[in-house]
Length: 296
Image 1 (cartoon, rainbow, N blue to C red):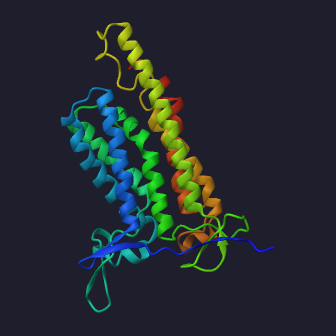
Image 2: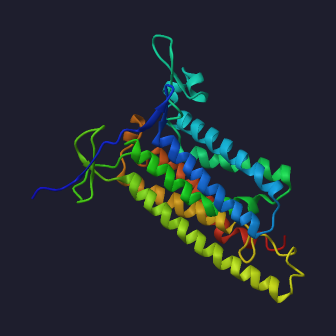
Image 3: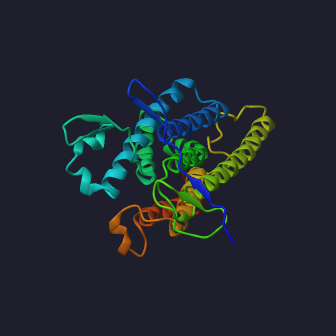
């Protein structure tokens, strides 16, 4: 019986202006960050935090994610190349053998590095604007899955981070790679992160309703006294986000091809090893942080 697999070979370049190409990859990253921006802005308004504190947040997040994701890819996945091409690590250009420069954009970005870069940038933001660090990362966590969804769609458009060969009816043939039907691992992740985002929004809306009820019950007199995380504990959404994303990431790696050669002899690949500390941190903040800080 002939299988009707999905043959996948989109042009990664959407269009070109003046020699500068606009690629789906970069565009989907921007869309993901923009959607995250809107979600977090709404949370700031719900919690009655001023725009003067929100507006700089986008700058911190954008730089933290971009720098962290870029360094994460270069250091963890392709250090053998970038240690001799340092400028290509920090600039969106490739130096050709002729000595000419070609604009390529930041084609290599790693989600683990982006997560770490974001966490560091938010720590700097919290110190400057005097908001508890966990209150900030909780709000960012609600928006993170939709950003992750867009990033994996970007990988799909680039025909990268492909799955292992399979005979499932929905297999993709990534024609830019080979003619084998494979798991569309990028699509699996994108759909999972979309579901995680919907779950986050539902939990957030339930919590917001309880917060409004508590404020109304006291005629608004204690509104400013309620912790920003109320009715959840600080760090809950942060922990939930890390746990659900990186637990899923650990197991989905079994259906994906290794990204670099040195992973072939490893029991768990680099993505799985890098996921473990994030899962541990997530579980801690979901279930143990409140108990350890009950008197604070």
